[in-house]
Image (cartoon, rainbow, N blue to C red; front, side, top):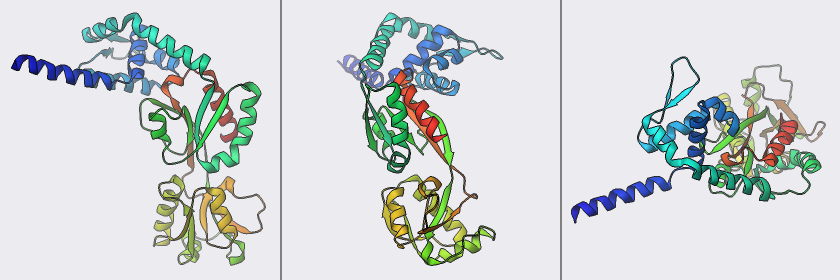
Length: 314
């Protein structure tokens, strides 16, 4: 009875381990084994060489054995005995599953669910949507205006793609860099403070040390970058007076004379008489990423949306 009980426990652990395997890891391993190279597999999946290698390494960790050996000085790979056994056991069944998924994603996926921070949506996505509609008028786009929960929403299956200032870490999500933008210090013109940008930045920022700071909700990337940057250069943390959900709201409060803020340069009108602005060249640019779930790498509508976003945001 003890032996049977022990076998049952081990079987339970094996089932638990199998249940946690991401099919994208099996797909990558299957393609690497079939093509004999990480490069060929990564091209077919539209992911980076490193992502393909990471998928296989993660599967090896879960499997508990080396599956692939890379020959020194060669980009070709060979299967270990354990790798050959796993690849043989996958056989035609995995091909059938992947084919069915491909049919579903390419032919039936008439709704794309896209996560975008509110400010980016307001400023860029009307033009992006117009370009997308010219080639895919039949596809419904459902937008989720979020910033802090996009990765979780993608992993929960609630989103197909996202544009974000965050670099996601999960191997089941593929990201490509779209471009970057600068941040700007903005304050009410009625304050009468100079905006020359000619003197030492620390001297200019000293003027704001005791003034109210308008910023984004906690957890948003621009808020944290701005607080770190200003705190270091002013010698004290900014005095947060008001928080808002996006750049449009933050700018409205600054225009009303309620404080200064740090916002994306594109959120400030080219000739806005109500505010003064200093571009913060000393800050690292904010990067913008396009992300999609790994299974949608070959979906033509995801590819179209990425191209439209790159055209507008690069």
